[in-house]
Image (cartoon, rainbow, N blue to C red):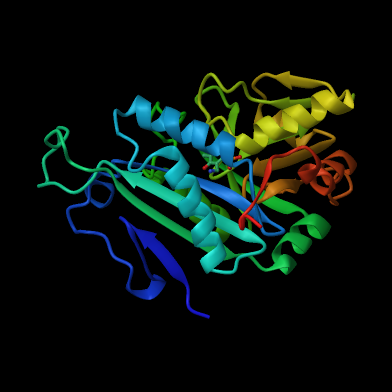
Amino acid sequence: MSRIAYVNGRYVPHGSAQVHVEDRGYQFADAVYEVCEVFDGKIVDMTRHLDRLDRSLRELSIGWPVARPALERILREVVDRNRVTYGLVYLQVSRGVARRDFPFPPAGTKPALVVTSRAIPRTVAAKVADEGIRVITTPDIRWQRVDIKTTGLLAQVLAKENAKRHGGKEAWMYDADGNVTEGGSSNAWIVTADGVLVTRPAESGILKGITRAAVMDFAAREGLKVEERPFTIDEAKHAREAFVTSATGIVSPVVQIDDAILGNGHPGVLASDLRRRFHEGVELLPVRAY
Ligand code: PMP
């Protein structure tokens, strides 16, 4: 079956889907994006993802490319047309197409919208659950507005490529004080000896992850203690457990940080439980309205 992408009002074959060379997303990374998990044919936490999209757009003074209900329909349609049951749906909004010039383009320039979706084999998730992942640390060299979900991801490209070269699945970036900021495309967590979940406050140096919020909700319901505070790489290496959260990876146990093996080298009990039960409390939107 051939894949379908949505590009500026049209559903087109993925292989020939194109944007203009002067799209500001392409020229300047003047664009924002969202990724939602597709689980059992349902889009996970779409409301929260679109709320964050709204914030990203407002922070950058980019307009909505289509009204929100229309975007919701497009997301569902793209997942449906691609017959994705487990995987992801990706959306990107750029400031639009205009002659290459740094200041904003003329009023009336239409924001551009691209939506794609793809399946992720269940075996990938099963391997992460069974074996956990290794993370490789690297200095955080990003700009200061990492709270906005922009497509300017070159620092993460380099960090994750470096992680891959060293046998890691994710990079953990750290700030000038040696505190972990976040993963290349995930939020970072540790579990203390007392069973407290620790993650960096969302106010500085990280993207406020939707999966992070879902884990916090889960913790609140289950009476687990969460502490929002910075932690160092050294603390993480000696933690009882560690894990990362992201829409596509949900809760991924970390079993090794650089050369330090955590605990017994197997996914932690708490992280595994959070992963197994993750979808209990999230919003699940069926792709097809029956
Ligand atoms: N931090 C960064 C830098 C990310 O790219 C992502 C994933 N897009 C996350 C955190 C996790 O966010 P979410 O749970 O909303 O996917």
